[in-house]
Image (cartoon, rainbow, N blue to C red; front, side, top):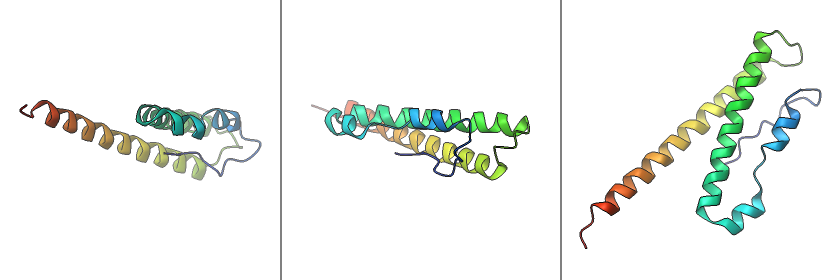
Length: 103
């Protein structure tokens, strides 16, 4: 799950935070499900942090941050959170189903 914003301008103060939040594809391939899930959670968290930072910048009327960019970041963070919530609900349901199986 990759939620990076590609429309951030080079002079944006959040560009370095975006580069730090990129998941490592090589680690995902070697680590299995838990590593991929952890990476997805970190990506969602980074998207939420980035949208919060952009909201603060817009509220402080920073001319380098556009309202459109902020709204896109907010929507990406919201979609990522909803997807994570659905995955968590499915995992809990699968665990419940397994625990209710008779052996």
